[in-house]
Length: 65
Image (cartoon, rainbow, N blue to C red; front, side, top):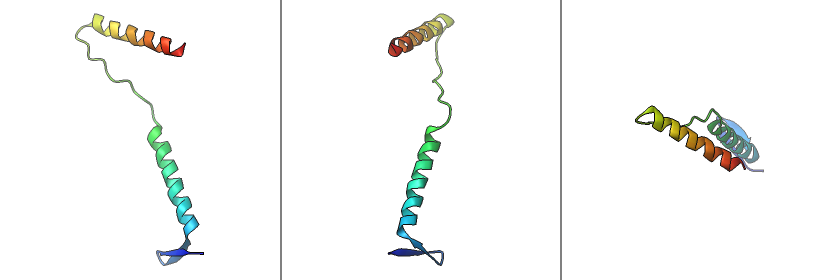
């Protein structure tokens, strides 16, 4: 079997592969975790903001069906 010398120790190649794949998986899980926030609504007046909220609510309901 082949190996690499890392910090004065022999490390077999399959352990390096496992470490790289494990690190990539953990990084992917970390990046996809967390709460997703909706962007702020920058309306000019309250009625416009309410219209946007109602429109988004109707669009989400339509996607569910």
